[in-house]
Image (cartoon, rainbow, N blue to C red):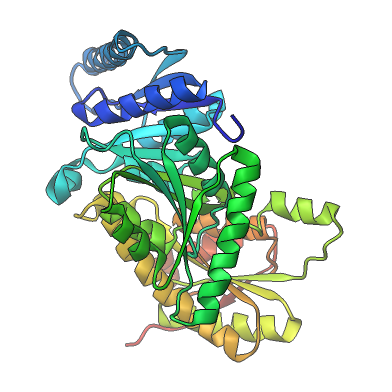
Length: 436
């Protein structure tokens, strides 16, 4: 079946939260003819006493969990091609194993325990949604959740949804569900609505040619996340969204619609990453076709006064050079784990703040006529800045610095200093002084 994954990886924790996810993984593997693999990641609990005993005990619990889930699948008529037990952090371990075996889809359960439960235990499923470079299907617990009667593919947001449409249609065909492409014009202009309808018909043609089934199209007005969530209530539905990823940065770029859907949806969600057009792989593709690429400038902003001064300088420079300006905001990858609210909701809040910061720089670029694109990524700030600069081939990289003393830098470190020290391209630091 064209577009269907050859290998599916089920991430299991052995709890009831993976019951429906396991059922979904087995269903898709059987009906789509894919290999089903399983992984369980266990984490060592630090202890000053009897660490060896604790380690062996936790490892055995993990092994028992994995074996029990595999037996359950086989007793239910499924077939497991391979199981893996990994020590480490859940999200990182699952992503690494998916890449190691060449999985085309990761299936993970969602506990659905409400804000308090997620505040305590975090959310592996949301972490996978934001960080995996392999498509991820998040399946909440509930008999009515799987199988869905319909797959909705959301278009019109920040995300690229070409692959999301193809994969969503392939999964729908395997389980006998209907497919709808939902496009949002973003304004109540009749002309834009017609354009959205024509674009959806073109996407439907592409999916029909590749998958063999033609989706229905539904152009609408508003915001794509709200539009899709509103349709979700009509019948059991799987929502399919795309997300952009920069290969070297290794983090999915956060989109407003995806954030909202992750925090609000009650049904299964399919997230399909696709290479950002500016990534190295895409640049190489364009070079082969002879398409010219102009210069690029990267500016990082956190919304502070000095970073906005850096943004203003970068906008003027991009306008003068005729360069494309990439405006980057980095959400610290560990922050959502300690935010005191559900992972997805906290990432949504942080990305809203990031969009506000990048939007201010974008407005500056528009004033001088410079082409501009906003990026919001998860990661460690200094590493993310360097990785994004490398991916989009930006030169120079422009940052703001607070102008702190040497002693303050020695005590708290500095993102700008780390970037300046490790960069293999031009870095411009725009200074500033905190108010007294």
